[in-house]
Length: 214
Image (cartoon, rainbow, N blue to C red; front, side):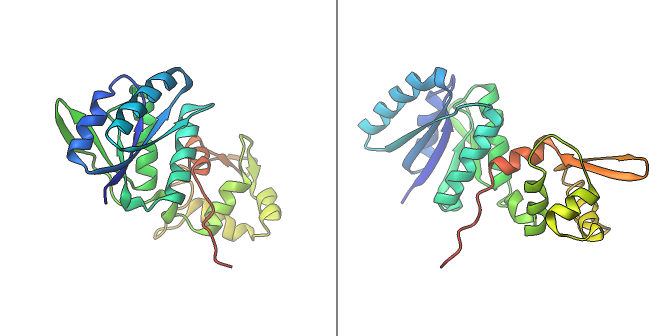
């Protein structure tokens, strides 16, 4: 059995094949913007000539948000230990997006320098595993760009203000959403207001509700 390699399509397709020499490959998933779709199809043809299963996923919309969404879907389908990300194949922006999404999901990743592969220092630790169900509920309730008062969120979530404040601010032992940089907080007239941060929005794009057994 080999890895399923996730690779953004960009200006360094040679790095894909260098990576495949280092890491036994069973399948390749090419993530591409529309302007690189022809390049992705050519790569798929070469890979299939080597009997490597290949799938192309086209991103539509914000590159960073789409990358997080796609990674979230892939992590819900595949065992994370079977996935590895080649961040060397894309352009600067797609490489940055792929590496950020890999960090968020705790996926093994590597770059390529010359003809050598270099593993990225990513811990096998998904950001999502660090968040309790209540913290995720709070983030999902704020899915947008507006500030909410604690009173508003408390009513929407049917959660006490003190518990809501704990999940947002944390304490000396446990980090809250503010410390994780997933929300932005401001104070006006002795009232606390909170909204989803850009990082919080990206994590939500990649969040897939765990499947429950019937």
